Amino acid sequence: MVSRTPLILLACGSFNPITNMHMRLFELARDHLQKTGRYQVIEGIMSPVNDDYRKKGLVSARHRIAMAKLALETSDWIRVDPWESEQETWTETVKVLRGAATNLRSGDPTYKSFDLAQLQLKHHYNESLRLLQSKKEFMKNKWPIERSTEDPLSYEHSVLPELKLLCGADFLQTFKTPNLWKEEHIKEIVEKFGLVCISRAGSDPAQYISESDLLTQFQHNIFLVKEWIQNEISATQIRYALCRGLSVKYLIPDSVISYIARHNIYTEESERENEGHLLQPLKLYNTTVNPLND
Image (cartoon, rainbow, N blue to C red):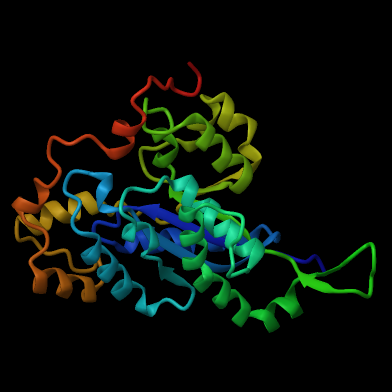
């Protein structure tokens, strides 16, 4: 019997608000990866972006976290992680991935060799590690045990989970936006972690990859997942509908609808939030960064 590699899916984004489509991304990705016979998906993590990202219409992370937690109450494997949203400033996606990976490798609460930001991130991701350790018996039965080649009797350890970034396929297109990404960050994401991209009507992820030398180089680490039932739920359109007093029932969970109504979150005023502001990465990366193929 071929053993499977344990895998964690991490999705970064606004989740403004969380929709049924956001949650479907995780389910579609898990089905696809497990059908390859190579992976066992053990956890999904949603990491809402910091308010400092400055995206137009972005409501407070406090509300976005609360709504995501309500929406995920029915999931036994996906959770929301507030760490990124709780930082003083916007945190680059690659740094969120680095911290999660570092924590999985070490499991060491002392964090002696990292700077303060990394230490804080590793500390927060202890929750991920705790959840993984609670699955220890499952891991022991399902995943291979490796022994030290130097002393085969000295210790045993379970295979460490892989960590991949989960996204919609149009996410690939943002890599071409000047000053939105550092090219070295793109390379690190696709080379060291990998992407799981869910298709969407009107997007052609295979074309995005073929148009980029860098993405083509690491396309073996990019998993393209076809959405077998087209679902075009858009958080932007959800907000527009709410501003107009239209029903969004069956598009987002009822618990989230109730929360939005109770706190009167999405209004014409909230849609003007950050109007006229540049996205934080566009402000920070103020030197010219060419698209991947230029």
